[in-house]
Amino acid sequence: MKRDHVSTLFLATAQETFERYLPRIVRCLGELSEKQIWWRPNSASNSAGNLTLHLCGNIRQWIISGLGGAHDVRVRDAEFSERGPLPRRILIRRLRSTVREALRVLRRLPPTALTCRYIIQGFHVTGLYAVFTVAEHFSHHAGQIICITKMKRGRDLRFTKLPNTSE
Image (tube, one colour):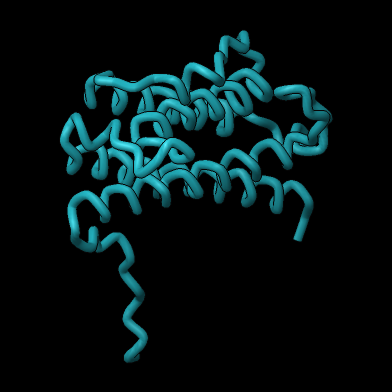
């Protein structure tokens, strides 16, 4: 397999991760009441609203700014200090817009950018590390938002659909 092919496949897989989890997060935010979006199980934990803001900040800083060259405007502490009620529609609009912009950066990113070195959030990383870390981070926090939604709604959201293996 040629290196460019692997790089292209890697970037496509990262894009698929955002495209898989974005609708799940949006659905969870839609299933929670405005009050539940900002509910925290305890002071050491974050609400679904805070996690959504945090994902926007992380994606913007690492992909849109770090790899895409946009100005870094992140205020990380504000992502966690917000207590709402920032309305659901604003959270969803912000998350969709951020993911859409990040996907544009990833689609334009040349495979050689994965081996380049960047300084993002004070870390010295390769482009590959940045993309991998953000995709992993996105799925991790999506799982937390899903868990919060299951706890508050008391039911399975049926996101997992296994392939038919009876053939």
